[in-house]
Image 1 (cartoon, rainbow, N blue to C red):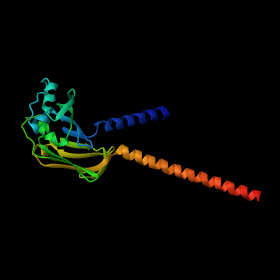
Image 2: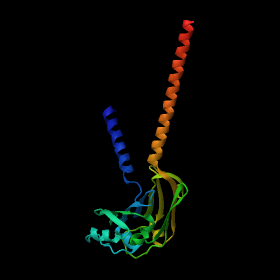
Image 3: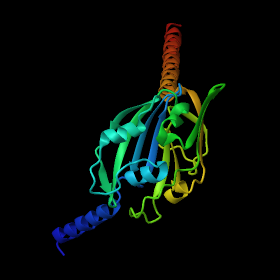
Image 4: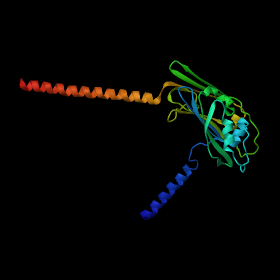
Length: 250
């Protein structure tokens, strides 16, 4: 067999592998997902990625479930707008598994007040400082569990809460026991369990200094150590030089 057919077969096999690995190019997919970027002062940015069916079923919100019905993004914005939350963006809807999804981005000055906005009323939030540690606690209680009819759920759908921590994590109860890249913690729950109101407790403790500050401090400390080492080497070389010159004069 010539080299060209072998190369063609290799490229074909590689393409098939890539197609297989890209069947879910964005990793695990969630029916409802909250990403919380909490800051050291208790403020937070929240990104919600959700199907409209999950919004209706979990929170009882009045959103269109008919795939052909128009979606009023301003109406969705109003569902998340409250005296304590500021909605910064509602995305254009997208489709997956025959259902429509949206992304809502919002900001809150005090994460503990999030339950005053209807889509977060199912949870209780705690944010407190204990010495040199900050504690974040989010306890999800019962959902509305509104009937939404046949929207194509097959029981494999997942709900996720993902925390983005700005400083060094000292404790967390994420089931994976891992702190993912960029200090990310993740909790998952089957959608059917969340609809049934099975509790979900999210807890994390972290330092009061930003990772960037710690990184800069470590960098400066390393630079200082390197400078001291170099200075010591230079001093040793100069001293040896003086000693050798003194011996030659003697």
